[in-house]
Image 1 (cartoon, rainbow, N blue to C red):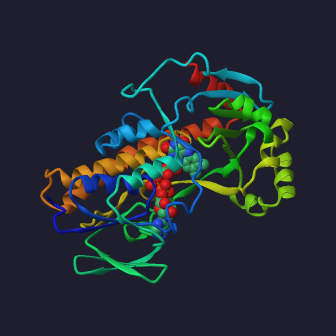
Image 2 (image 1 turned 90 degrees about the horizontal axis):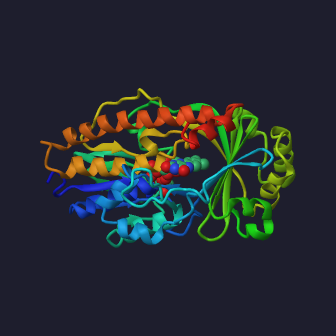
Image 3 (image 1 turned 90 degrees about the vertical axis):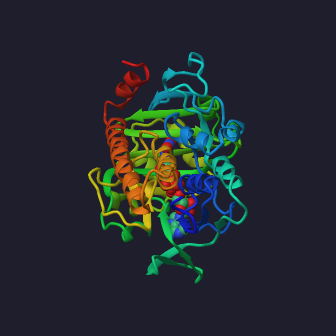
Length: 386
Ligand SMILES: Cc1cc2nc3c(=O)[nH]c(=O)nc-3n(C[C@H](O)[C@H](O)[C@H](O)COP(=O)(O)OP(=O)(O)OC[C@H]3O[C@@H](n4cnc5c(N)ncnc54)[C@H](O)[C@@H]3O)c2cc1C
């Protein structure tokens, strides 16, 4: 195998990096994951993710983790209602959704980010993940790289894989190409509301263990139930990036004033969310990598997931692409089909860029649709199959 006697460093222990570590270990490779979090419980994990048959689930099947996934996913969490800014319901699939199961092309089971990460971590050999390892720089050493971390430790690897997400610090070693702002920003709370039945009863009733998508005036609020009984949500709309920098979203008075000013058409029912959220909000300007990006393949460095092809979250493809990247990269490196590592990486990168560009295009188009004045009609047509 091409990876015999090679030390592999995956930087970033998100879904993409951990799936790759698992797949490489199944093939007998020597792998470490360097993750900046202090430990596995250091960070509250956000909303649910739906995995797709042809990508995320395909990677899990190959990683022999489908049974573990079945124990951790949340049946029913994919049920959805579509409402307007006054919370009037226009679409619901809570009653009439066709029964689908694993193996069906349209089945998109939801899993919370926390259990997905836990499941992937538990599948790895002990001490695979080196916590508290925030990558800061690296330099060439022999045929590989010497990586340096913020905690002043260093590690050598023959091959480095950047799986360190949207603000990747590995990416500049491959390409100077930067993502562009899509004109849309999200205001997000990952921990949301712990007891929505008392803190946000009207929203909780609508939510009913699934998801709400609300559209009005070119703006969108997405609410999702969490496995712990709580809810998380994010607001997204077209806005100048600089306008949001002026607001302190941790200050409840500023938060409520911002919502009332920028969402004047929205009914007071939505204030339940902002008044009762227990943690702070994060502003996420939505960026996307250029769709025609390319770079020269190296023999000892590549990247996957958001690090390689950050895209807006409006087609639900980000995590699925990251996990499919992991599958395709491990296949290229371990299948024996390629004469050397550089050729294997080149094959992976070519197909990954093409596939990710198609998903990014769909995500950009959905972003435009969701944040248009006619969003409600367009989304109803989509969900009604018109
Ligand atoms: C609001 C929102 C909603 C979304 N909804 C969906 C959805 O419904 N469906 C979907 O498919 N996708 C969704 N996404 C996108 C999805 O979250 C990402 O595409 C996915 O998490 C990418 O996985 P990844 O492993 O590439 O990167 P990440 O999940 O970002 O993981 C990167 C890891 O690297 C670590 N790291 C970062 N920097 C360093 C460093 N310097 N050194 C060491 N470690 C580092 C981080 O701590 C993290 O653990 C959403 C994104 C947002 C913002």
